[in-house]
Length: 340
Image 1 (cartoon, rainbow, N blue to C red):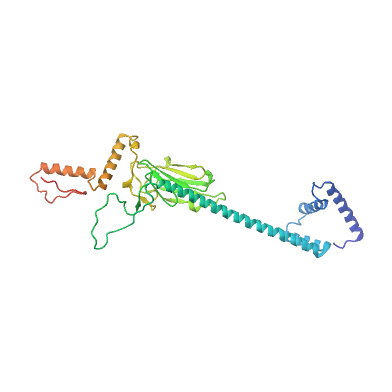
Image 2 (cartoon, rainbow, N blue to C red):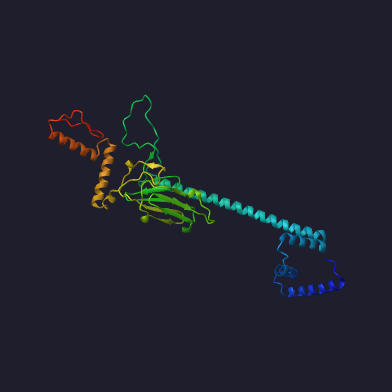
């Protein structure tokens, strides 16, 4: 301890004894009077002095005081206690980090399993078949086109006349598109940011810590324009986000949602007949014409427009027998100049 004159030391001892008695009278159950006295003393230093402004200096002062009062054993005990506390803190931090990594891996596996199941259900019809880009072999004979073959580089539509990418599954009707995105279980609406413009789409998910989950980020240019005021999204079961897109041109099959993503072969689209009954007369005529033209192309036969041109040429030739049509040609597959 500091070298105080005997009279001063006697006064200090009296004050400290009085303080110890007050602390003993007010010590909480289970706490020793000495612990209460120390709390009161360090509380006084904290409230009435700048002792703890420099924490390193304060710690050194306490250790020095313990050394002077109790010798090296007390200092060693204090240092051991501090090291034990630091080691316990490190071990706790490592356990928390390992637990967080395990939870993250488990969540990633769960999301992947959910996504795989979704894709499996959505692709039950096409089974994910992708045609290979293939050209004619040099020197080989040109093979007759298979009407049932897929367009090179495309997949067959899923049961919802859409397709799938690494990050989402989509379906469509002639009027709209629905995009389903798997998000981490427990995701809240405030963690989802989904934006639509006429030509572009942006989708982001943020973790509870505010960090963007890049694995769920989607952005790009739409295959065709949409009506942004009629587009919206909903969070389902805190595990999926369903985005509804209203097509601006409502009599058109999309080959993909965003340009550059995997495309489907729209010739294989099979709209539900029941949906045709819901269309107005003009729209239904247009849709039926599209379906007819698709079937004709698959069979290598003329479309309705090509047939109309052919019939018009035939009538013109009949009206003008004096003209020579031996070298006449008409655009379109499967046509020859009609015999007169």
